Image (cartoon, rainbow, N blue to C red; front, side, top):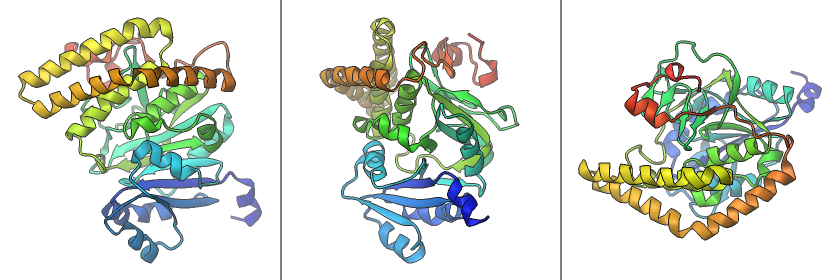
Length: 355
């Protein structure tokens, strides 16, 4: 490719947030440096690792730029801190346990350059250990149901579908996975990035929800493919992960639902949290039950802060809206995914009713 052609293309920065991830970087950074898109900068933002990550990078990948974060700020604030030092048109926010295909970035750039109203996008996300199966963290794009429960095309709760080409069409979704999120740098900054109080988990859903409320689109691009291990920072059954998921989901719906929806949906959600708590108790899952109780309690005591954030969000929507007539509803399931999965026993996306 000629130098003048490269200079005319948007600059992409791959930013990998790493915490004690040397073993993952050894395994997956080789695929990242083989990405064919140009112009491209590759960064590793180190969240105060203690496992030799920095020495490994300096020795083996001198061309990779290092951003040192002084303490472990978590996923959300860690990215906010790191991206202040990154100059680019687009960010590819990549988990440390993701393998990418060489040509993954080109279709993402092409899609977003064709429509300035797309704020973020994600590739097809498959499981690293079974590359014929969709991966939990994003699959074929994120959706949300009427009570604020997130799920994916290709993954509902713990059931991931095999990839048989059923989701090979690009289209709008509700949220793009934080495991491989392609986002306009200018919009990330304008919307103040991830909510640092989330620490980790669901911060990307919250950001995409804020984008959509302002009229922007979120897209799934199946021509781009990545493979994710999952659980690279916190194992799936870790009680702290349970705590973060329950707490952050409540933070998210409180911040983003319209008032007329929130006044009835929040009590229903708190009731369902209590059902989950007592179910865990009856099953003898004491750590899980305590994690749910702790999440609900922390949500309640943080309500004054969440009220302020809700007001700040409202101001930000109106300052940055591109479509004042409607909030984009693509990727929104008007039914209950809990009802469909647990009562109707529907675990495949294409079996859900078109509600």
